[in-house]
Length: 377
Image (cartoon, rainbow, N blue to C red; front, top):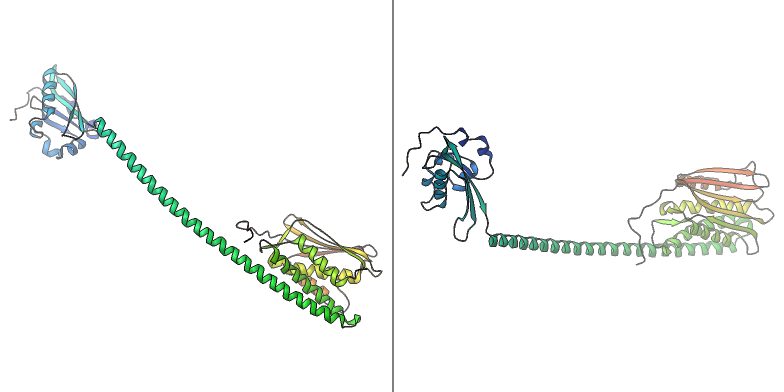
């Protein structure tokens, strides 16, 4: 079936480097019997044979006898004109587009270059697009369902955590309420002992009563607060002032306690030494600053940068040569030093005879950041 190729010299461009790297199936043939001279990997994959199996053989031996490509090659060889054709490869299958160019030598076709492009019929392209859309829709549905399930699990987890936090808050508030009640019972017992003790021996009872009352006020605030991580110092100062007035001052006393405070909060761990410090300094002022029984004590808190500044000031007689935190035979100064150290602060005192005493304590703000705002259960 094969015929010898023409004796005319073959053009060099029948075999070129670009053929090897072309993405589309391409081949070059020569002569009237269309002997395969070169072929690229894409064409090998299309035919399903290796290069060695095809090079040097007439292309008619590689294709079915009735393959339309053979007639196209004959036309190109005889007419010397390029041609394009689109035909169906198999019933119901895709379409192949053939483009062939003649390679001229001595003013006649010595061979041809073949390029094959697979094309899908319109209905097949539409079906493929519909299938792709359907797959995309199903995938989107799967992703949406997975996201909904994950969101539902997350909502359940969030709900459980919120409930756990509410339960913990309720428990803390209940415990704080019980501690406050127990401390108030202790304060009442001490107050009863004070009534039965001569005034000259009751000072120790009075100091102890005020200290315990200050701690009780802290737990009262915790039991009423919407969160327990921090304590508002303005409310805490007012409660301490009220407690000192009730326990240390008579209703007819000429001494008053004034509270001025910014909206500053302190972490609950340092609230106890803070309250005891205020109580200690306020008690000392009530005892020693007003021998004539009249005067004013000012309790104030303000934020100074990253520090909190507590001020306990009086307009009493003042103490020029004595530490105002120390009373003869007492341990007030020891307590004050301990409380200041627990706050991580430093104390400064300004005093003069007849114009009062001012004590300032600065300690770190240590802002506590909450993961979220907590509401009532």
